[in-house]
Image (cartoon, rainbow, N blue to C red):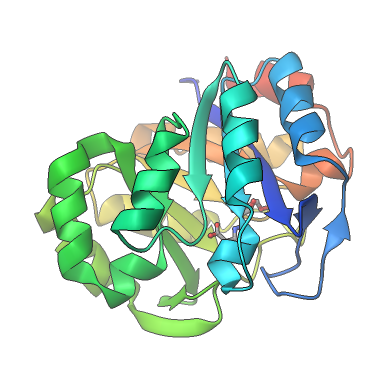
Length: 241
Ligand SMILES: O=C(O)c1ccccc1NCC(=O)[C@H](O)[C@H](O)COP(=O)(O)O
């Protein structure tokens, strides 16, 4: 088995680490300090952190200072997501020293700007393809934003370096990843794909790792770690075979 990168998630709402169900505002379970959570994943051996500013994604404020503090405290690579939609928010995100940012809504609403920043920043930019069925969702996953495969074709042409693919129906549910969706996206692009949403068990990680030859590069894990379905150490042992 080829190595699958693991990205433990810290999603931040109102200054707290939380997990949502289907990404819906109001379904938060709180897990305390985002910095403590991130440091715990780093201590456990993570090489990546997936850090999401949910307030910025929903348009209910932001946790920019906290996200910068957490990113600055990490010795590991950080992928930043949530509300990065214009020059100012992109500059603030990149100024944290993160390894890359994840654009969502902007890829649906301001495609010219996204093409420009892809050209400027290369693989520091990933695009989050967050879907219900094959319909993309933006604005914190609250609004429809077009067809997955049409958008993917456009982003491929524009040189997008990487995609983070989330089946919203699975996100935060511990119901397992949507492997068919991951296979279909891999078939539609030659860029690496990071799987997100629904991981519930070590077997789910083994199943995602089985898609590495197709182009899956990594897996984001949130709820399963907070719910202690397995430890990060166990997960890292599974994917590093
Ligand atoms: O990433 C976003 O911008 C975002 C926006 C609105 C709601 C949720 C959002 N992200 C959620 C995540 O990235 C989760 O951390 C990730 O999918 C983990 O899911 P799970 O393992 O199912 O808890």
